[in-house]
Image (cartoon, rainbow, N blue to C red; front, side):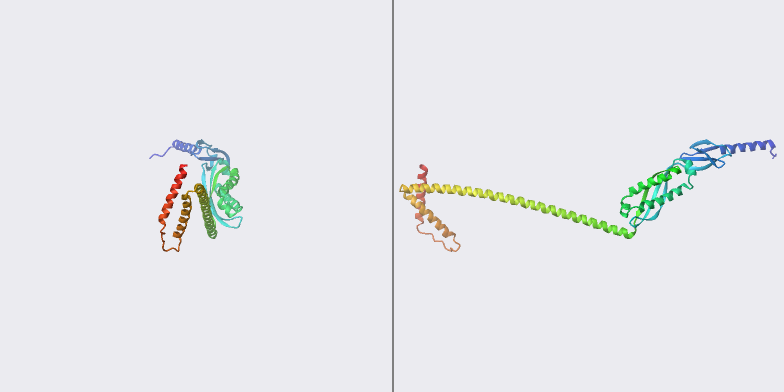
Length: 307
């Protein structure tokens, strides 16, 4: 093989140099990324996604910044609350770089800085609250942490979109005490509900008895009224009968006298028959006379009606 001539070598070297220059000058930035450009170690500009050109050999890419939202896991740590209770807390923080220059040059190791910032602020916020507040106000803790951390990361060109407490775990003995307390509260509420139910039952029962007593009294009153009315009518009938008999006696009618005698005779015979000590009832021989008397009474009443 013949050796290359000097001219050919120059041409090959020139082509290689052109290729290297093109590679150094042309930069393709992926979507969601931004590159910082440095000239002799000094920041000059930021390359946006797409095809960009820089001065070869003078400009270099300093940092390749991820502009998408990212999640940083905050490791768990033991925190002492305001009432001296120990809880284990961990969290996650969501961040997004909004200024590549500040995120690259205003802080060294952005992720580590945000992680340590979150750890210290979790201790501060949780430590300023009682245990009951820590366990029941997680949203309030998240809001406080977001406000503080977002403000602290603003000079770093980073936006903290949200921060969430993943877990808050009190010690085992405190957990047992809380379980006992919740059980006691549930039993207390159950007893209160049972007492309220018994109270309502007794009230309904008393109201029912009251209504029954009222109705019974109304019934007795109505019965007494009807009984009084019946006695009044009976008395009026007796008075009319007595008046009729008296008028008949005044006229000399013997049936009127027989009426009074028969009435008393029947009453005495009725009392004798109802006596509890009476074993044997003797029917008097004058029972036929009693029938005659009753017949006289009927004649008397018929005479009174004819008038």
